[in-house]
Image 1 (tube, rainbow, N blue to C red):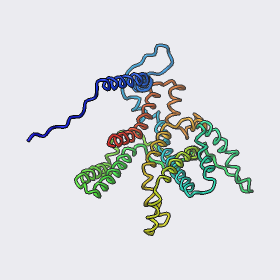
Image 2: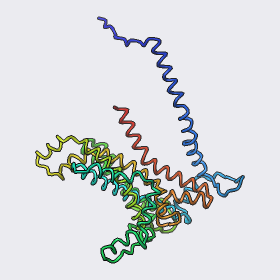
Image 3: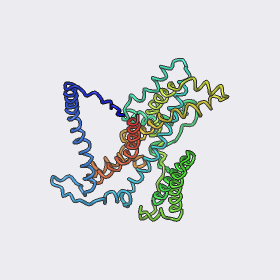
Length: 384
């Protein structure tokens, strides 16, 4: 018995010609943008990477540029004269952590308050979103006046008859949460081991026992490697080098959170308005109070919004420049960040190769945040 195959009807010739014409038109329309992107973005990135592998310095018309490989990067991470760069990396790390925590926490709190259908919600929403309309330069200038040690915030207690504050804000040189740079490889390996252990636990819960054993075994090996002193075998610096969180960054963090918390509030508010009321009512019927409703129902549904906000805010914090420049200036080493050091190294010291190396390090840090998120998002869209 022969089964007749159903063939897909072929497109008429005029439709095929029209489809090909539309494709060619689309390619021609996109080609200028692709060429400009290739030249002025990826081409310049490639040039910056190459420059970072040379010894280019000085402003002569015909500079002698020699290829020196990874020497600039080795000097940045282990050289005795580049301790400021390593402190800048630590500053960026702590700034990112506190900036994310402040924006997410305050944004979620404001969104929850506005979600209670209060009177004048539109007015409050506009007020909370208004700082986003300002540039970081304007925000930095305003908060610099407020954190002036001789006025601003320090004078507020005097309005009610109390003793004025004596906080130094942006000039405070006190450090907390200090650690030795030589211990950094071991700290990173322990963090990786902890993440792998958590992944192994989740896989075990989902029944993927073999994958959990492999991941857990790698975590144990890394932890034992660090505990047995393996982390100190990784070259860092010749001498002990202490770094920590500079309290002068507190003022900058407050200003950054003030400006960006409205953005996270808007995202969380949109997410809260998208949670079906039936789920909340069902949880209340089951005996949950309002705190438990948010903990077990609302917050899990807001996880994608939290991840998106963390990616965007993390990208902002890793390449922060203008806010710090406006608030503390370029020469305040206690509030320095890699972006400012890159500017000083390239355009004041005329060490273009080392400035390019700092720029590449910043690019890699941002890529570690952006690329996995884009990959996951594109893969999810492809699966849909």
